[in-house]
Image (cartoon, rainbow, N blue to C red; front, top):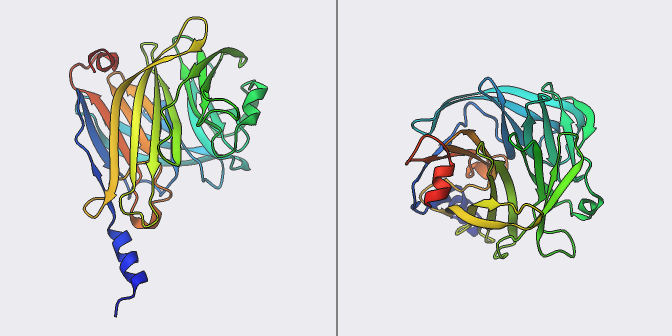
Length: 318
């Protein structure tokens, strides 16, 4: 005789996600590589050259990053091959690594952490260099669950951009902080996040495009007690930065909606965002180590189907 616990467990093992049809001129391709890659809590991603990408896992045993070699067919907007080259550890404890970016001039990586709300510099071997962004003191007020998350580097303006997942205590707006190549603070901007509709919400990633524009990714996640009907809504915005600071303007580029059902396994908690080639966006999802065999380490590729020149075409037409 089946018990209620057995029935619920069986139902949960069948839970999957339905993705709503996507509008606009952005083709979405979703892929997973459960044989090639270990289960993870993948959060941030950036290219480091020669087809390699550095990826952070916020629940990894130690501070550091994975290196994945990823071959992308940019015309079809698909990953054609992926290889795990291993984890490069600093030997330090995990600090809830969330965002990662690469600085070409120094050939080093920078990683943001929510546990300490710091951004440290790393060599490509995974070791810390001893340098870090000179974080303004107000960011120390960020909670460990909603602290420094998004991180990107703008090669055109030679600026780092970072922000917290949710506004600091006492604030209603997010503070986007920039830093120069000398790692010192520059301009601070204010960003109005989407209204909180779910318990899990906030900015999970930023991406500086080759044309000098900035994208911000927000997500809202609802997970009912029995999991069935869980949903994730991800918004990608183009951000216009005022010349002298102040509140930024944002414009929706793409909305991605997913939910758990009984027919598919595509629920995606979108955490990392990167532009590997002009006209193509790469998103990585956090599967909570492929939770109970239901969630997946998804790689989503968003391709501009109107032009191969730049993702800016999407921003102009959407």
